[in-house]
Length: 218
Image 1 (spheres, rainbow, N blue to C red):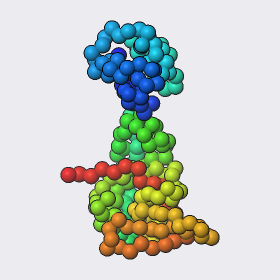
Image 2 (tube, one colour):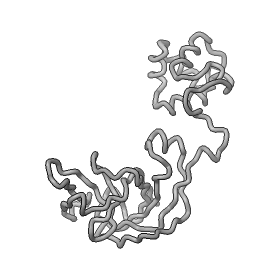
Image 3 (cartoon, one colour):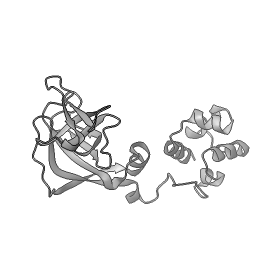
């Protein structure tokens, strides 16, 4: 029961205090269940918890019953993770790398599907793993870092780090929309102050996607 309650609240982006407030019960009741201290809880209060998180009481107790939306407990481990292809193409954090039209996929990286869906709110089909090289995005990104790129997000609003072709090559840069310009313009920024920012019209840059996550070796 503790695992089911924790999985459901995590799926909904709630904490124990918020669940208790929604159910109009004391927080200790929810905390005790989550900590495994209450195997025989008060059923009237449990009904209120179940109603707050949109599940049936029997699902909380026994794992059987209706859940509104997607069940947070996946029985099939193959459905718990999403395979994201690793693209054998490197984005420079300096002068740019040549864009290759036909890109070969490498070994996939695996991410929890719940994290992709609820935290990133991304379509797995739009995700690609790439590598970056150079020092222009230091200290945020280091040479050799692995980045998760959402090719479904190409708008520089809000600002963020993007993989793009800036007319000279494929680069990883921070993009910032410049308001009140016709045609629309963006500021291309390196986190390393050694490199000066520059400006391009949106037509002059080909935004590949937004960087949503990164990892590096120690």
